[in-house]
Amino acid sequence: MTKLLKSLWARFLFQDRGILPTKKLLIVYVILTAALGIATAGNLSWWYVFTINIIVFLVSLGDLFFSPKKSQLSFKRTLSDEMERGLPYSLTIEVSNPSAYSFSYRLIDSLPQSFSRPFPIKGTIPKDSAVKIMYETTAAERGKYKINKLYFRYRSLLGLWEKQTTVELPQEVKVIPDLTETKQYLENAQAFLLYEGWKIRKQLSGVGEFAKIRNYVVGDDPRKINWRQTAKLREVMTNEYEPEHGKYITILLDCGRMMGAELKKANRLEKALEAALTVAAAALQKGDYVSVLAFSKEIKVFVPPAKGMAHLQTILQAIYNVKVDAAESNYAAVLQYLEMVQKKRSLLLLFSDVRTFLHEESALIYLKRLRSRHLFFMIGIEDQTLVKRTKAEPTDVQTAMIKSIAQQQMMFKKREKNKWEKQGLQMIEAPEEKLAVTAVSQYIDIMNQNLL
Image (cartoon, rainbow, N blue to C red; front, side, top):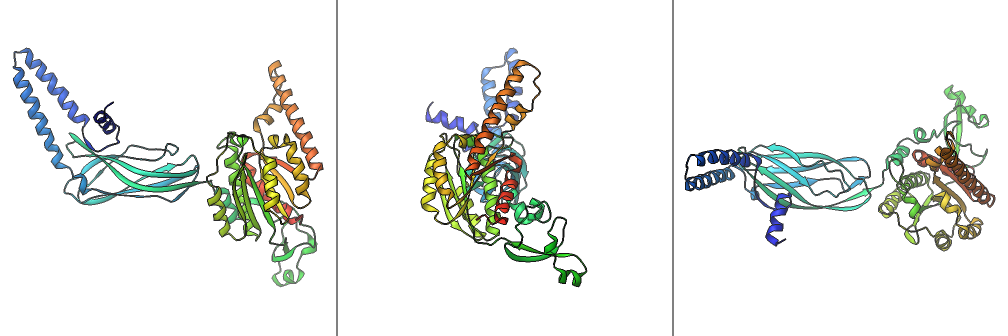
């Protein structure tokens, strides 16, 4: 295809500058051609046919003078610098038309393919005015994206010809993990975890530092009732104690092949990222030091430990773009690296696939060595398909075989988990929708028991 043909093809694909005939003009020519075809049957000269076509064509070009020049239009795009994965966001395009002509338009924005694309957007813009065009989009994948061009077509009210212009509006947008659960915890920890009362894990009596006096709720230790405040306020009040602050939490994120397994709404890595950020927010809010290490066959990201809520943004910017690798995770290498960089006693919170981890005998050697200094805890996502297979009714031979194999896999997993737990290495699995809640609950439980 020659350069000229490529340019013409791009013009028809909404990707270039130029002038294009509209459907209205084509319909006029179809009607005119039919009429002239009938007339030529009555001995009308072909010279007249040619002349009439040229006159109609030249007259139609006059329609271009009733629409603004391309240089008269100006465009501005407004969008957020950061978008959370899977959540809808509004984008605004402001079009200024200082000319004396109104026009109708169609536009296509150069959003990446992983974004939802509600195009083309249609409308009209009055003369001597500025109009804000809004549309919603949702990003399906994390990462950093560039949005450069805006493709804009407009026509006069007669609508015989359509002008097309391509505007350069370079902008960058970061798609970060969905922080809905993190925000829910930060806004109202009690609603997120039932933080007070009998449903929270109990703290060892007499351990920790005094935090506050609050209303007594069912399940509180009666020995902690503050009788002086109870008599003064005529309500049962109790003392609340918190674990000592300033502990070290190390979050390990597995980015290996098995973390790319698709779930109901995302893959395992997406859910692990969301849960890890929620745990980090909870720990930083409590005054603990948090570090994050993402890995697969090699170390991808390491964020050194720090405290304060500002550190959450540091963690987010470091790990928002980590992807699943098409390789098996090297647990031994990451644990060896961790032994060098994390000298202080720390809670090692690993988000990974339990089944894959259980097959890593080499990791057990390093974990036994780390156990003397650190506390290890692993959280995985429960395999709903496997659970469903084990509970299926064996209505025929095939279903019975599938159920037996699923039960065999569950037995293997349970047996291997018991072996690791005897070594002091705890691991649990949680449903994907409760992963963040379970992870934060386990963190709080460990802190309440002062295991660090």
